[in-house]
Figure 1 (cartoon, rainbow over the protein chains, first blue to last red):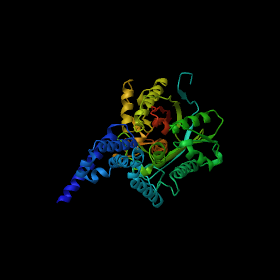
Figure 2: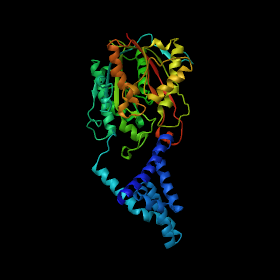
Figure 3: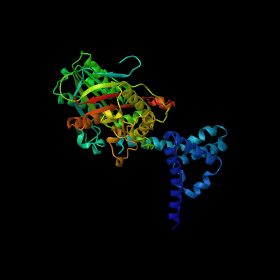
Figure 4: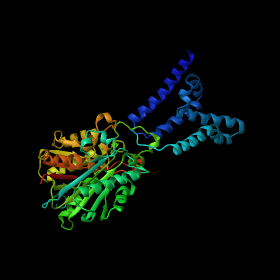
Amino acid sequence: MDIFLQFLQAFAVGGFICLIGQLLINYTKMTSSRILVIFLLLGALLEGVQLFDPIESFAGCGITIPIVGFGAVLVKGAVKAMHETGLLGVLTGGIVAGAAGLAAAILFGFLMSVLFKSRTKS
Amino acid sequence: MNGGEQTIVFERKPHIIAGYGIVGPKEGEGPLAQYFDEVAKDDLFDQKSYEKAECKMHLLAIERAIERAGLHESDVCALLSGDLLNQIISSSFSARELDIPFLGLYNACSTFGEALILGSIMLTSGSMQKVACSTSSHFSTAERQYRYPLELGTQMTPTAQWTVTGSGCSVLSMDGEGPVVTSATVGKVVDYDITDANNMGAAMAPAAAFTIATHLRELRRKADYYDYIVTGDLGIFGSEMLHQLLLSEGIDIAENHLDCGKLIFDETQKVHMGGSGAGCSSSVFNTYFLQQFKEDKIKRMLFVPTGALLSKVSSLQGESIPGIAHAVAIEVA
């Protein structure tokens, strides 16, 4: 049963993030790219005030898969690298920690564009 | 027409001798399906890109309209065309395939009205015998130029409109059959400080209200002189706003107002506020409304294509959206 409870928790938190996004689309004039950046910064902020880990242990992928998770990874990497290599780590750490995600996004984006053609949405 | 006035009354009246309208598959599932001359099965029109597809659709509309008028390319003195793409490539690239002198136009989605007015003036000046007026738009080309890449799969906001994939062409001549252009009101650019590129109905409604009110005032006509006052692509929200704006000037058009953007789709098609685009008014006019004239169901209509004069750059820089609308009075001969 435990695993279903985990699913439910991930769904509730992930769904809540999407609900905020939908409200922003419906009731503000913000472009989708701006909404995306807000969520990224929100993740960075949550990590900064050390709230991200407790939420992650509760919701798992419900918070790491949305772009909020990427914001948190950037800050986490920067803090870790700062402890290891000093101030320069603030600049390098975020990118290093996010490298797998970034490279995957570019690689899979490229593969998809080779394999498929864009279509008019229905 | 004197200085300070906007309305031209044509003493010799040009006929709309033929029209042709072609649309994409989604429009072909809408309420006007039976009226369109051609509905494409695939909105790529067997081309490699959507820009090429729009161009092919536009070219088809022009060629078929000329054919329907019983003319050859060499009979047409001028082609007046426009579309929504940067540097109006759909029109210019269509004209590249044709042996017709070409004048490219841009007034956003009101371009078809602009073309009809200029074409009528050119004919009545006596310098030309026959002209063709055409416009086109395509959902997928407009979407990626004005909004986001198709691949991004961005959601539409609640006030957004759906760009019509369609093209229409009218052939105008001083002699022949068909309804006539009796007068026209050239619109002024009106800006009510709407900055939301996803709410173009609201940006265009004031321009439409201004042009319609000016037309009726200068010709001393009441709104019920026309069987229908037909706007281009105000959509549901913009139409509501138009009614309110005109009511505040004592003009009630709620009874006889139609909007091509509302006519072309129905509520089940997930197009939010309705259709839009330079091809919306031209594809609907050249099929549905010309048919209504032919069947004697309409005697007089005021055709008011509406345009939002924004660009991607201007809306990203937070500029407001200037609106424009031209009115063309079309009556049975």
